[in-house]
Image 1 (cartoon, rainbow, N blue to C red):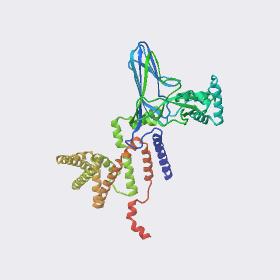
Image 2: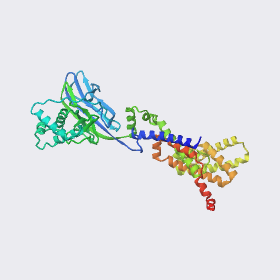
Image 3: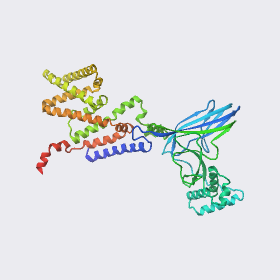
Image 4: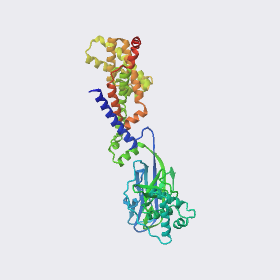
Length: 508
Protein backbone atom coordinates (compact mmCIF):
# COMPACT_ATOMS: atom_id res chain seq x y z
CA UNK A 1 0.00 0.00 0.00
CA UNK A 2 1.40 3.41 -0.94
CA UNK A 3 2.28 6.09 1.60
CA UNK A 4 -0.68 8.33 0.83
CA UNK A 5 -3.13 5.43 1.25
CA UNK A 6 -1.65 4.64 4.63
CA UNK A 7 -1.83 8.34 5.54
CA UNK A 8 -5.48 8.55 4.49
CA UNK A 9 -6.33 5.37 6.39
CA UNK A 10 -4.56 6.72 9.49
CA UNK A 11 -6.35 10.04 9.09
CA UNK A 12 -9.73 8.30 8.94
CA UNK A 13 -8.94 6.31 12.07
CA UNK A 14 -7.89 9.48 13.90
CA UNK A 15 -10.98 11.40 12.77
CA UNK A 16 -13.32 8.61 13.86
CA UNK A 17 -11.56 8.20 17.20
CA UNK A 18 -11.40 11.91 17.96
CA UNK A 19 -14.98 12.43 16.75
CA UNK A 20 -16.41 9.83 19.13
CA UNK A 21 -14.16 11.19 21.88
CA UNK A 22 -15.43 14.75 21.34
CA UNK A 23 -19.07 13.58 21.25
CA UNK A 24 -18.78 11.66 24.51
CA UNK A 25 -16.93 14.57 26.12
CA UNK A 26 -19.07 17.50 24.98
CA UNK A 27 -22.53 15.98 24.56
CA UNK A 28 -22.69 13.09 27.01
CA UNK A 29 -20.42 14.73 29.58
CA UNK A 30 -17.95 11.91 30.25
CA UNK A 31 -15.18 13.34 32.48
CA UNK A 32 -11.82 14.23 31.00
CA UNK A 33 -10.04 14.02 34.34
CA UNK A 34 -10.09 11.21 36.91
CA UNK A 35 -11.50 11.76 40.39
CA UNK A 36 -13.72 14.68 39.39
CA UNK A 37 -17.22 15.04 40.72
CA UNK A 38 -20.34 16.58 39.28
CA UNK A 39 -22.93 18.45 41.27
CA UNK A 40 -26.39 17.02 41.73
CA UNK A 41 -29.34 18.20 43.80
CA UNK A 42 -31.82 16.21 45.80
CA UNK A 43 -35.19 17.94 45.70
CA UNK A 44 -37.68 16.70 48.28
CA UNK A 45 -41.29 17.77 48.57
CA UNK A 46 -43.31 16.90 51.66
CA UNK A 47 -47.10 17.09 51.47
CA UNK A 48 -48.83 16.88 54.87
CA UNK A 49 -52.55 17.14 55.49
CA UNK A 50 -55.38 15.78 57.60
CA UNK A 51 -57.66 13.29 55.86
CA UNK A 52 -61.39 13.54 56.55
CA UNK A 53 -62.04 9.77 56.63
CA UNK A 54 -63.24 9.25 53.05
CA UNK A 55 -61.54 9.02 49.66
CA UNK A 56 -58.53 11.30 49.22
CA UNK A 57 -56.90 12.59 46.04
CA UNK A 58 -53.77 14.73 46.03
CA UNK A 59 -52.03 16.10 42.95
CA UNK A 60 -48.49 17.48 43.10
CA UNK A 61 -46.62 19.09 40.22
CA UNK A 62 -43.20 17.50 39.79
CA UNK A 63 -40.27 18.51 37.54
CA UNK A 64 -40.65 17.28 34.00
CA UNK A 65 -39.75 19.38 30.98
CA UNK A 66 -37.08 21.42 32.71
CA UNK A 67 -34.59 22.97 30.28
CA UNK A 68 -30.99 22.60 31.45
CA UNK A 69 -31.75 19.81 33.93
CA UNK A 70 -32.51 16.10 33.84
CA UNK A 71 -33.76 13.71 36.47
CA UNK A 72 -31.41 10.96 37.61
CA UNK A 73 -33.73 9.19 40.09
CA UNK A 74 -37.19 9.61 41.56
CA UNK A 75 -38.86 8.21 44.68
CA UNK A 76 -42.51 8.37 45.67
CA UNK A 77 -43.18 7.59 49.33
CA UNK A 78 -46.90 7.28 50.04
CA UNK A 79 -47.97 4.65 52.54
CA UNK A 80 -51.25 3.10 51.42
CA UNK A 81 -51.72 5.49 48.48
CA UNK A 82 -51.64 4.52 44.84
CA UNK A 83 -50.05 6.96 42.42
CA UNK A 84 -49.64 7.77 38.74
CA UNK A 85 -47.44 10.37 37.01
CA UNK A 86 -49.39 11.76 34.02
CA UNK A 87 -48.58 14.87 31.99
CA UNK A 88 -51.20 17.59 32.39
CA UNK A 89 -51.55 21.07 30.90
CA UNK A 90 -49.16 22.66 33.40
CA UNK A 91 -46.49 19.97 33.22
CA UNK A 92 -46.02 16.67 35.02
CA UNK A 93 -47.93 15.59 38.10
CA UNK A 94 -47.92 12.81 40.60
CA UNK A 95 -51.51 11.98 41.52
CA UNK A 96 -51.96 10.07 44.78
CA UNK A 97 -55.28 8.45 45.64
CA UNK A 98 -56.67 6.22 48.35
CA UNK A 99 -60.15 4.81 48.92
CA UNK A 100 -60.29 5.75 52.59
CA UNK A 101 -57.95 7.61 54.92
CA UNK A 102 -58.34 9.42 58.19
CA UNK A 103 -56.09 11.58 60.31
CA UNK A 104 -52.63 12.97 59.62
CA UNK A 105 -51.14 11.90 56.30
CA UNK A 106 -47.71 12.65 54.81
CA UNK A 107 -46.65 12.08 51.21
CA UNK A 108 -43.13 12.50 49.90
CA UNK A 109 -41.65 13.07 46.46
CA UNK A 110 -37.90 13.02 46.06
CA UNK A 111 -35.86 13.53 42.86
CA UNK A 112 -32.15 13.73 42.12
CA UNK A 113 -31.52 16.18 39.30
CA UNK A 114 -28.35 17.20 37.51
CA UNK A 115 -27.33 19.77 34.95
CA UNK A 116 -27.94 18.64 31.39
CA UNK A 117 -26.98 21.24 28.76
CA UNK A 118 -28.47 19.02 26.08
CA UNK A 119 -31.91 19.25 27.64
CA UNK A 120 -33.51 22.04 25.66
CA UNK A 121 -37.05 23.25 25.79
CA UNK A 122 -39.18 21.67 23.10
CA UNK A 123 -42.61 23.20 22.80
CA UNK A 124 -45.03 24.02 20.06
CA UNK A 125 -45.73 27.56 18.92
CA UNK A 126 -48.80 28.80 20.84
CA UNK A 127 -51.69 30.61 19.15
CA UNK A 128 -52.15 34.35 19.59
CA UNK A 129 -54.05 34.99 22.83
CA UNK A 130 -57.46 36.68 22.72
CA UNK A 131 -57.52 40.33 23.73
CA UNK A 132 -58.84 40.53 27.31
CA UNK A 133 -61.86 42.72 28.06
CA UNK A 134 -61.58 44.43 31.43
CA UNK A 135 -64.04 46.59 33.27
CA UNK A 136 -63.60 50.34 33.09
CA UNK A 137 -61.41 52.16 33.88
CA UNK A 138 -59.00 49.17 33.80
CA UNK A 139 -59.60 48.50 30.09
CA UNK A 140 -58.75 52.08 29.13
CA UNK A 141 -55.64 51.98 31.31
CA UNK A 142 -54.57 48.72 29.69
CA UNK A 143 -55.03 50.05 26.14
CA UNK A 144 -53.18 53.28 27.00
CA UNK A 145 -50.27 51.32 28.46
CA UNK A 146 -50.12 48.98 25.47
CA UNK A 147 -49.94 51.90 23.03
CA UNK A 148 -47.26 53.64 25.06
CA UNK A 149 -45.09 50.53 25.39
CA UNK A 150 -45.56 49.65 21.73
CA UNK A 151 -44.19 53.03 20.63
CA UNK A 152 -41.06 52.37 22.72
CA UNK A 153 -40.42 48.82 21.48
CA UNK A 154 -39.74 46.98 18.25
CA UNK A 155 -40.59 43.33 18.85
CA UNK A 156 -42.10 41.03 21.49
CA UNK A 157 -38.80 40.86 23.38
CA UNK A 158 -38.31 44.61 23.68
CA UNK A 159 -42.04 45.08 24.33
CA UNK A 160 -41.90 42.70 27.29
CA UNK A 161 -38.73 44.26 28.67
CA UNK A 162 -40.15 47.79 28.41
CA UNK A 163 -43.47 46.70 29.94
CA UNK A 164 -41.80 45.02 32.93
CA UNK A 165 -39.59 48.07 33.44
CA UNK A 166 -42.66 50.30 33.65
CA UNK A 167 -44.41 47.87 36.01
CA UNK A 168 -41.31 47.78 38.21
CA UNK A 169 -41.04 51.59 38.46
CA UNK A 170 -44.47 53.21 38.17
CA UNK A 171 -43.11 56.68 39.14
CA UNK A 172 -46.61 58.08 39.56
CA UNK A 173 -47.93 56.47 36.38
CA UNK A 174 -51.69 56.36 36.94
CA UNK A 175 -52.36 53.54 34.45
CA UNK A 176 -49.68 51.29 35.92
CA UNK A 177 -50.70 51.93 39.52
CA UNK A 178 -54.33 51.22 38.66
CA UNK A 179 -53.53 47.92 36.92
CA UNK A 180 -51.10 46.71 39.62
CA UNK A 181 -53.31 47.55 42.58
CA UNK A 182 -52.10 47.93 46.14
CA UNK A 183 -48.93 46.11 47.30
CA UNK A 184 -48.52 43.78 44.35
CA UNK A 185 -46.22 40.80 44.79
CA UNK A 186 -44.20 39.06 42.09
CA UNK A 187 -47.11 36.83 41.08
CA UNK A 188 -49.41 39.88 40.74
CA UNK A 189 -46.83 41.62 38.55
CA UNK A 190 -46.50 38.53 36.36
CA UNK A 191 -50.28 38.21 36.00
CA UNK A 192 -50.66 41.91 35.18
CA UNK A 193 -47.88 41.61 32.59
CA UNK A 194 -49.59 38.58 31.05
CA UNK A 195 -52.86 40.50 30.73
CA UNK A 196 -51.17 43.45 29.00
CA UNK A 197 -49.13 41.11 26.79
CA UNK A 198 -52.36 39.40 25.76
CA UNK A 199 -53.79 42.81 24.84
CA UNK A 200 -50.74 43.20 22.57
CA UNK A 201 -51.40 39.69 21.10
CA UNK A 202 -48.13 38.32 22.57
CA UNK A 203 -48.39 34.76 24.02
CA UNK A 204 -47.13 34.46 27.59
CA UNK A 205 -47.52 32.17 30.58
CA UNK A 206 -46.59 31.93 34.22
CA UNK A 207 -43.70 29.65 35.16
CA UNK A 208 -42.89 28.42 38.66
CA UNK A 209 -39.52 27.16 39.77
CA UNK A 210 -36.97 27.00 42.55
CA UNK A 211 -33.43 28.27 42.90
CA UNK A 212 -31.07 25.34 43.43
CA UNK A 213 -28.92 25.92 46.48
CA UNK A 214 -26.39 23.95 48.48
CA UNK A 215 -28.82 23.14 51.28
CA UNK A 216 -32.07 24.82 52.23
CA UNK A 217 -35.36 23.88 53.84
CA UNK A 218 -38.73 25.42 52.97
CA UNK A 219 -37.52 26.73 49.65
CA UNK A 220 -39.69 29.44 48.13
CA UNK A 221 -41.29 28.68 44.77
CA UNK A 222 -40.47 31.66 42.54
CA UNK A 223 -42.76 32.85 39.70
CA UNK A 224 -41.23 33.68 36.35
CA UNK A 225 -42.67 35.04 33.13
CA UNK A 226 -42.37 33.14 29.84
CA UNK A 227 -42.98 35.02 26.58
CA UNK A 228 -43.04 33.61 23.06
CA UNK A 229 -41.39 35.84 20.45
CA UNK A 230 -42.69 33.89 17.46
CA UNK A 231 -39.82 31.40 17.43
CA UNK A 232 -39.06 30.38 21.00
CA UNK A 233 -39.97 30.96 24.60
CA UNK A 234 -38.05 33.65 26.47
CA UNK A 235 -37.81 34.01 30.24
CA UNK A 236 -38.24 37.29 32.13
CA UNK A 237 -38.03 38.21 35.78
CA UNK A 238 -41.48 39.71 36.50
CA UNK A 239 -40.03 41.96 39.22
CA UNK A 240 -36.87 43.37 37.62
CA UNK A 241 -37.66 42.80 33.96
CA UNK A 242 -34.31 41.12 33.33
CA UNK A 243 -34.32 38.55 30.56
CA UNK A 244 -33.19 34.97 31.11
CA UNK A 245 -33.24 32.48 33.92
CA UNK A 246 -30.80 32.80 36.79
CA UNK A 247 -28.09 30.11 37.06
CA UNK A 248 -29.27 26.79 38.53
CA UNK A 249 -32.94 27.71 38.32
CA UNK A 250 -35.12 24.61 38.07
CA UNK A 251 -38.33 25.17 36.13
CA UNK A 252 -40.99 23.19 38.00
CA UNK A 253 -44.36 23.73 36.36
CA UNK A 254 -46.35 26.25 34.31
CA UNK A 255 -49.74 27.86 34.66
CA UNK A 256 -51.97 29.27 37.34
CA UNK A 257 -52.64 26.01 39.18
CA UNK A 258 -51.14 25.68 42.66
CA UNK A 259 -48.31 23.28 43.43
CA UNK A 260 -50.62 20.90 45.30
CA UNK A 261 -54.35 20.27 44.88
CA UNK A 262 -56.10 18.24 47.58
CA UNK A 263 -59.54 16.64 47.68
CA UNK A 264 -60.81 14.93 50.83
CA UNK A 265 -58.46 16.59 53.31
CA UNK A 266 -57.63 19.81 55.14
CA UNK A 267 -54.75 21.61 56.87
CA UNK A 268 -52.54 21.24 53.81
CA UNK A 269 -48.86 21.93 54.42
CA UNK A 270 -46.28 21.75 51.62
CA UNK A 271 -42.52 22.10 52.09
CA UNK A 272 -39.76 21.91 49.49
CA UNK A 273 -36.19 21.15 50.54
CA UNK A 274 -33.04 21.09 48.43
CA UNK A 275 -29.66 19.60 49.17
CA UNK A 276 -26.64 19.60 46.90
CA UNK A 277 -24.51 16.47 46.65
CA UNK A 278 -21.56 15.29 44.59
CA UNK A 279 -21.92 12.37 42.22
CA UNK A 280 -19.71 10.35 39.92
CA UNK A 281 -19.79 12.13 36.52
CA UNK A 282 -19.56 8.77 34.75
CA UNK A 283 -22.83 7.68 36.37
CA UNK A 284 -24.42 10.98 35.34
CA UNK A 285 -23.10 10.62 31.78
CA UNK A 286 -24.47 7.09 31.51
CA UNK A 287 -27.86 8.20 32.78
CA UNK A 288 -27.83 11.01 30.25
CA UNK A 289 -27.03 8.51 27.49
CA UNK A 290 -29.87 6.27 28.67
CA UNK A 291 -32.29 9.19 28.73
CA UNK A 292 -31.35 10.10 25.17
CA UNK A 293 -31.23 6.41 24.13
CA UNK A 294 -27.72 7.06 22.89
CA UNK A 295 -26.08 3.82 21.78
CA UNK A 296 -22.58 5.31 21.81
CA UNK A 297 -22.91 6.23 25.47
CA UNK A 298 -24.59 2.98 26.46
CA UNK A 299 -22.05 0.88 24.52
CA UNK A 300 -19.23 1.38 26.99
CA UNK A 301 -16.98 -0.71 29.19
CA UNK A 302 -18.96 0.40 32.24
CA UNK A 303 -21.74 -2.00 31.19
CA UNK A 304 -19.40 -4.95 31.84
CA UNK A 305 -19.11 -6.71 35.22
CA UNK A 306 -16.70 -5.08 37.64
CA UNK A 307 -14.23 -7.96 37.36
CA UNK A 308 -14.12 -7.63 33.57
CA UNK A 309 -13.73 -3.86 33.87
CA UNK A 310 -10.62 -4.39 36.00
CA UNK A 311 -9.16 -6.72 33.36
CA UNK A 312 -9.78 -4.29 30.52
CA UNK A 313 -8.47 -1.45 32.60
CA UNK A 314 -5.08 -3.16 32.29
CA UNK A 315 -5.39 -4.47 28.74
CA UNK A 316 -6.37 -1.11 27.26
CA UNK A 317 -3.05 0.34 28.43
CA UNK A 318 -1.09 -2.27 26.44
CA UNK A 319 -1.48 -0.47 23.06
CA UNK A 320 -0.11 2.67 24.71
CA UNK A 321 2.93 0.69 25.86
CA UNK A 322 3.28 -0.80 22.36
CA UNK A 323 3.27 2.72 20.87
CA UNK A 324 6.04 3.68 23.31
CA UNK A 325 8.05 0.67 22.15
CA UNK A 326 7.53 1.69 18.51
CA UNK A 327 8.76 5.22 19.22
CA UNK A 328 11.78 4.06 21.22
CA UNK A 329 12.78 1.44 18.66
CA UNK A 330 11.92 3.10 15.32
CA UNK A 331 12.59 6.74 16.14
CA UNK A 332 15.13 6.64 18.97
CA UNK A 333 16.79 3.36 17.97
CA UNK A 334 16.87 1.57 21.33
CA UNK A 335 17.65 -2.14 20.89
CA UNK A 336 15.52 -4.64 22.81
CA UNK A 337 14.97 -8.37 22.96
CA UNK A 338 11.70 -9.05 21.24
CA UNK A 339 9.01 -6.56 20.30
CA UNK A 340 6.48 -6.88 23.08
CA UNK A 341 8.71 -8.24 25.84
CA UNK A 342 9.18 -4.75 27.38
CA UNK A 343 5.39 -4.18 27.43
CA UNK A 344 4.72 -7.51 29.14
CA UNK A 345 7.52 -6.94 31.63
CA UNK A 346 6.05 -3.48 32.29
CA UNK A 347 2.72 -5.14 33.11
CA UNK A 348 4.53 -7.30 35.66
CA UNK A 349 6.12 -4.16 37.11
CA UNK A 350 2.59 -2.94 37.98
CA UNK A 351 2.54 -5.55 40.74
CA UNK A 352 6.21 -5.72 41.71
CA UNK A 353 6.81 -1.94 41.41
CA UNK A 354 9.63 -0.61 39.31
CA UNK A 355 12.66 -1.00 41.60
CA UNK A 356 11.90 -4.52 42.80
CA UNK A 357 10.74 -5.55 39.34
CA UNK A 358 13.96 -4.37 37.69
CA UNK A 359 16.05 -6.13 40.37
CA UNK A 360 14.14 -9.42 40.10
CA UNK A 361 14.20 -9.28 36.31
CA UNK A 362 17.98 -8.73 36.29
CA UNK A 363 18.59 -11.56 38.77
CA UNK A 364 16.43 -14.05 36.85
CA UNK A 365 17.98 -13.20 33.48
CA UNK A 366 21.54 -13.31 34.88
CA UNK A 367 21.08 -16.68 36.60
CA UNK A 368 19.12 -18.12 33.69
CA UNK A 369 21.76 -16.96 31.23
CA UNK A 370 24.52 -18.64 33.26
CA UNK A 371 22.64 -21.92 33.34
CA UNK A 372 21.85 -21.56 29.64
CA UNK A 373 25.59 -21.31 28.86
CA UNK A 374 26.27 -24.42 30.90
CA UNK A 375 23.53 -26.29 28.99
CA UNK A 376 25.22 -25.38 25.74
CA UNK A 377 27.65 -28.18 26.46
CA UNK A 378 24.78 -30.67 26.30
CA UNK A 379 24.22 -29.88 22.58
CA UNK A 380 20.42 -30.06 22.76
CA UNK A 381 18.08 -29.36 19.86
CA UNK A 382 16.17 -26.07 19.85
CA UNK A 383 12.79 -27.16 21.22
CA UNK A 384 14.13 -29.37 24.04
CA UNK A 385 16.58 -26.60 24.90
CA UNK A 386 13.78 -24.01 25.16
CA UNK A 387 11.71 -26.43 27.26
CA UNK A 388 14.69 -26.95 29.55
CA UNK A 389 15.27 -23.20 29.90
CA UNK A 390 11.57 -22.71 30.63
CA UNK A 391 11.74 -25.31 33.38
CA UNK A 392 14.80 -23.63 34.82
CA UNK A 393 13.08 -20.23 34.73
CA UNK A 394 10.11 -21.64 36.66
CA UNK A 395 12.43 -23.25 39.22
CA UNK A 396 14.33 -19.97 39.56
CA UNK A 397 11.08 -18.07 40.18
CA UNK A 398 10.11 -20.57 42.86
CA UNK A 399 13.58 -20.38 44.39
CA UNK A 400 13.57 -16.56 44.45
CA UNK A 401 10.11 -16.56 46.02
CA UNK A 402 11.11 -19.02 48.77
CA UNK A 403 14.38 -17.27 49.56
CA UNK A 404 12.77 -13.80 49.68
CA UNK A 405 9.99 -15.16 51.92
CA UNK A 406 12.49 -16.68 54.31
CA UNK A 407 14.39 -13.39 54.41
CA UNK A 408 11.19 -11.46 55.08
CA UNK A 409 11.00 -9.74 51.69
CA UNK A 410 7.41 -10.47 50.73
CA UNK A 411 7.82 -8.39 47.58
CA UNK A 412 9.91 -11.22 46.15
CA UNK A 413 6.78 -13.36 45.97
CA UNK A 414 5.53 -11.14 43.16
CA UNK A 415 8.23 -12.59 40.88
CA UNK A 416 5.60 -15.18 39.97
CA UNK A 417 3.82 -12.46 37.97
CA UNK A 418 6.62 -12.29 35.43
CA UNK A 419 5.68 -13.86 32.08
CA UNK A 420 7.84 -16.99 32.18
CA UNK A 421 7.73 -17.69 28.45
CA UNK A 422 8.92 -14.14 27.73
CA UNK A 423 11.75 -14.59 30.22
CA UNK A 424 12.67 -17.89 28.58
CA UNK A 425 12.81 -16.33 25.12
CA UNK A 426 14.78 -13.37 26.48
CA UNK A 427 17.40 -15.66 27.97
CA UNK A 428 17.59 -17.68 24.76
CA UNK A 429 17.89 -14.57 22.56
CA UNK A 430 20.46 -13.04 24.86
CA UNK A 431 22.61 -16.16 24.82
CA UNK A 432 22.53 -16.27 21.02
CA UNK A 433 23.51 -12.60 20.73
CA UNK A 434 26.24 -13.19 23.34
CA UNK A 435 27.73 -15.97 21.21
CA UNK A 436 27.32 -14.24 17.83
CA UNK A 437 28.08 -10.57 18.64
CA UNK A 438 29.76 -10.73 21.98
CA UNK A 439 28.82 -9.82 25.54
CA UNK A 440 28.79 -6.09 24.79
CA UNK A 441 25.86 -6.23 22.36
CA UNK A 442 24.02 -8.76 24.54
CA UNK A 443 24.38 -6.54 27.59
CA UNK A 444 23.38 -3.46 25.59
CA UNK A 445 20.18 -5.10 24.34
CA UNK A 446 19.41 -6.45 27.80
CA UNK A 447 19.76 -3.00 29.37
CA UNK A 448 17.76 -1.53 26.48
CA UNK A 449 14.95 -3.99 27.13
CA UNK A 450 14.96 -3.14 30.81
CA UNK A 451 14.96 0.62 30.10
CA UNK A 452 12.10 0.36 27.59
CA UNK A 453 10.12 -1.77 30.04
CA UNK A 454 10.64 0.87 32.74
CA UNK A 455 9.50 3.69 30.41
CA UNK A 456 6.45 1.65 29.33
CA UNK A 457 5.63 1.06 33.00
CA UNK A 458 5.86 4.77 33.78
CA UNK A 459 3.73 5.81 30.79
CA UNK A 460 1.12 3.07 31.23
CA UNK A 461 0.95 3.90 34.93
CA UNK A 462 -0.01 7.55 34.40
CA UNK A 463 -3.40 7.90 35.99
CA UNK A 464 -4.69 10.24 33.31
CA UNK A 465 -3.66 7.77 30.57
CA UNK A 466 -5.43 4.90 32.34
CA UNK A 467 -8.53 7.04 32.77
CA UNK A 468 -8.63 8.23 29.15
CA UNK A 469 -8.19 4.83 27.50
CA UNK A 470 -10.80 3.25 29.75
CA UNK A 471 -13.45 5.99 29.56
CA UNK A 472 -12.65 6.82 25.92
CA UNK A 473 -11.40 3.52 24.38
CA UNK A 474 -11.98 5.06 20.95
CA UNK A 475 -8.73 6.98 21.51
CA UNK A 476 -6.96 3.71 20.74
CA UNK A 477 -7.94 4.36 17.12
CA UNK A 478 -5.75 7.47 17.33
CA UNK A 479 -2.98 5.30 18.82
CA UNK A 480 -3.42 2.87 15.94
CA UNK A 481 -3.22 5.73 13.44
CA UNK A 482 0.05 6.95 15.02
CA UNK A 483 1.45 3.40 14.95
CA UNK A 484 0.62 3.05 11.24
CA UNK A 485 2.34 6.34 10.42
CA UNK A 486 5.40 5.43 12.48
CA UNK A 487 5.45 2.05 10.77
CA UNK A 488 6.16 3.78 7.42
CA UNK A 489 9.13 5.70 8.80
CA UNK A 490 12.35 4.57 7.09
CA UNK A 491 14.68 7.42 7.99
CA UNK A 492 17.63 7.53 10.38
CA UNK A 493 17.07 6.83 14.04
CA UNK A 494 18.37 9.31 16.59
CA UNK A 495 21.01 6.87 17.85
CA UNK A 496 22.21 6.37 14.27
CA UNK A 497 22.62 10.11 13.80
CA UNK A 498 24.75 10.11 16.94
CA UNK A 499 26.66 7.02 15.82
CA UNK A 500 27.53 8.47 12.38
CA UNK A 501 28.17 12.02 13.50
CA UNK A 502 31.86 11.77 12.57
CA UNK A 503 30.94 10.86 9.00
CA UNK A 504 28.64 13.85 8.81
CA UNK A 505 31.37 16.15 10.15
CA UNK A 506 33.77 14.67 7.56
CA UNK A 507 31.34 15.44 4.76
CA UNK A 508 31.18 19.05 5.93
